[in-house]
Amino acid sequence: MKPESFRMTPAQYLFTIACFIQSSALLTSFLVSVTAQDSWLIPITGYLACVPFVLVYAALMKRFPGKNLIQINEIVFGRVFGLIISGMYLWFFLTLTSLNLTDLSNFVRSSMLPQTPGIVMFVIFMLLCAWGVRYGLSCVVRYNVAFSVTAILITAASILFTASHMHLTNFLPLFQKPVLTYVNATHVMATIPLGETVVFLMLSPNVQLPVKKMGKYFLGGLALGGGMMLATVLRDTAVLGKAMNLFSIPSLEVYRMVHLTESMGRVEILFSIALIILLFSKVMLLYYAATLAFGQMLSMSSHRPIVLAVGALITVYAQVVNRSSLTHLALGTESAPVFWTLFELLLPLATLIVAALRHVRCQEEVSQQ
Image (cartoon, one colour):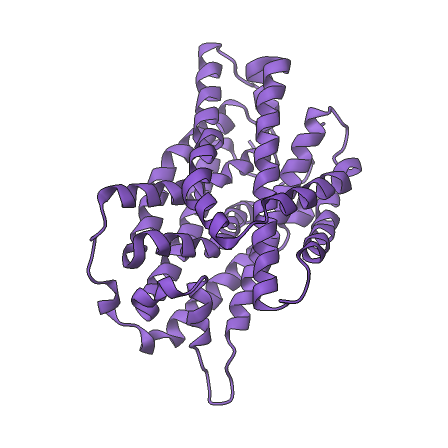
């Protein structure tokens, strides 16, 4: 199956990556539970730790222009072993989609519709995503620039309106945790969500950029999304201090403290809307990548016939991973970072090494070059 003819503009590419990272605002609760008032440090160290990941991705895109991850696996490892590795990535994409769908559904239920059954939320969101995925990548990424900019403006406004509640003493004492704690937290940040951008290797043929510049835009998108997460953690720490540990979603509590006038409150609805939009965008992109990977592995001419089938599989899978918040927290801070490293760094690096040893290179000229 050939990739779509649609090409993302450089701005769409950069802001789609940023939007993907911004949607992980719920991850701040993971950081707070581990590093407390030092959580602001982790987005910085996590970004630095993720730079080698992006360098490997950039090298693969440069060595195989016009090819996505599934095609690269087949070129480097052959049909049989390539399918095995691609099957592992398909499971990874399906798992990511299911976990983020669970986050989206649980957030909507807890903040807006507490009496709505989870399965109803799953089906509604998946049907909406299926509509976008069926129409292709142009529909999946069309509004990501607007989504990302809107989230940036809302975050900036929240910092401005909560400035009177901020206290620098909330950052003290500094660096009281064991060094291993910061290392583990950095690993979590580098793999969840920064390293999850390995999914963009599925979209690399659809970017209107020279392959030599794609790595720079990739890092730029990560920096923008990571910078917004840093700003969010700094704001939450300055406002809430040690009280952050008392809330499952610290950012939501910060927005509840904003009162523009005596009669205008409930500003947290802006945070809720922005987060729902960002998570919806991330789920749809992951859903598209999983469907595209599945279609290519089956040598189909188009991904459209299997969109609903993959959506049904994700919905059922989401029911399996939809466990308690404590189990979800343990998965995010302990198990997932270890497994995710395999897909985000080790396998891409192994692919690059094997390609170099076998002198495998794609010489195809693509239109954006």
